[in-house]
Length: 344
Ligand code: AMP
Ligand code: TRP
Image 1: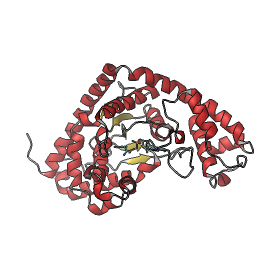
Image 2 (image 1 turned 60 degrees about the vertical axis):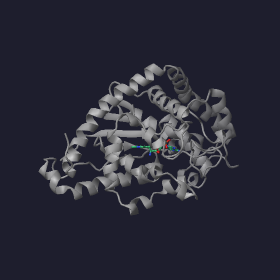
Image 3 (image 1 turned 90 degrees about the horizontal axis):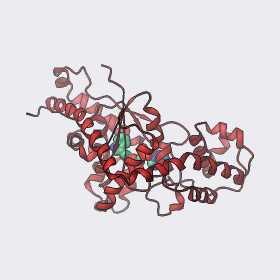
Image 4 (image 1 turned 30 degrees about the horizontal axis):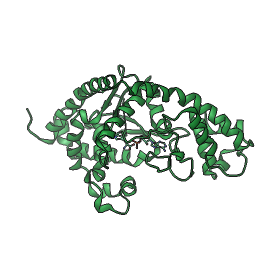
């Protein structure tokens, strides 16, 4: 059975949306709109796996929504909503808690990083997080998932869960007339020159919302002056830019800035090196500032404009949630039948 192609992805409302979120994820969300039906989710239930101040959480949910809109996602043709308004995500996640094995979750590197040394004190939600993520995708039976490189392992787990569900319930799936697979195996879309944008202060560390140094990232709401300052101060090595990609790969800070430039401009790293190979960083950084301000300036300004209109943002989320829920409820009906639960 061929599944209808459908795109799903999510962003956590945890503040400080940055260039990594944009180049690794949101920019791709925008591009996929022309070729696919897309569902983009503000994953608030994922955010609360670590402590969130309630008033900040509310603000951050609206801010991610404003970012989706400002970057150019069309909420009428596609769906923008927040996870907690569609209860079926949590419902399917419970079923998946009973499908996924402890051994699978024990391998998740993001849990190990986020839980740190004090693992006993991490929330149960943080541990079960990848099961909820699988539910987000599969409750819509989505086939394609644009994400940054750091989500690759979680996507593999989602595929394992889908596969095990299909196998475990093969006989009742067939009995219900869905062919031999109920869930598609969702494919990660992790491509291009900026699938892992690194910190501007340390080319070996991922650019992250939670880095204590604001200088380490370019926020989507940074103004032109701030962007310029952060790029000019970005860590580099003392050599001019290399002419080929092999040499670039050995120089993390240079590689990162070239990758950012390439992704912003929509060209390859090789093409950037053709233009700037042999140039000093001062010249390259000046060009990068100009490009970054041209691309990000309008997004930041639009975000700031939209964020003030709470009623508008909330209406987008309510409308998107209602449309998403129709699809999710349909899946849950079938899942209950397949598992053997009695329903109304
Ligand atoms: P999060 O903020 O963790 O919800 O991430 C939202 C999306 O941005 C996910 O698809 C991540 O993989 C992606 N992302 C986060 N940080 C980076 C980064 N430094 N480089 C590339 N993609 C990223
Ligand atoms: N785990 C993702 C992140 O931290 C966010 C996310 C939650 C997601 N559910 C998803 C991404 C489903 C893609 C599909 O970035």
